[in-house]
Length: 223
Image (cartoon, rainbow, N blue to C red; front, side, top):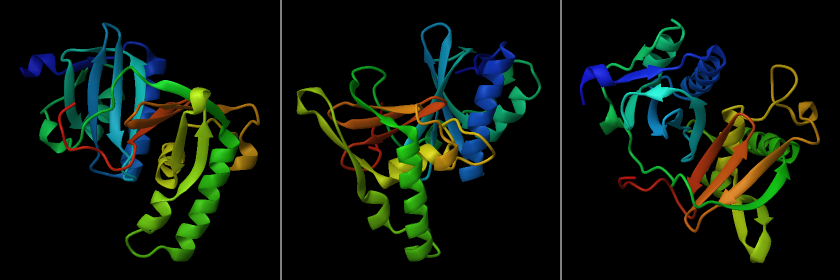
């Protein structure tokens, strides 16, 4: 892969801002975050990051990418976006990406749930984490606890663990009034779509999605 190809073109200022906001949130969770950029057709690029909750986050923007799939430093991309010029992605950091990505297609729509309810779950979970957490953060038993059961057509049922709810709110994907996503600041009509395959769970909010492999962490195998 030549360095000339590792360029991201985002001519639309709004799309540059969308990606910059996404990367800023990822870096807030991990100052050394890497972002995996993957081309989707000729005019879309999906940006994937790890959230620290064994759950991936993604935002798709209108852009052009010189390669099909590359992992680079999130800080490098963020700095490049702020120049307003095409972003030189620098050195590839593909070895820093440890897991597989979920499939692009094949997700079944299970149901839509009120965004406010998910934020309420996150608030209660944060209270419990403060009460029972230690120096290493919330206990795994809390993160792995199923906090929501969503049932769709044909009795399709998925369990949503707390770590997925935490990832969704940590990335601030739900629109809200004010500086902080508090349940009372979420419009009652705002929905989050729950989708699933046989092996992956995905929550789609207005500003991005989070995904986790059902029944466990991110698989350490090629996508």
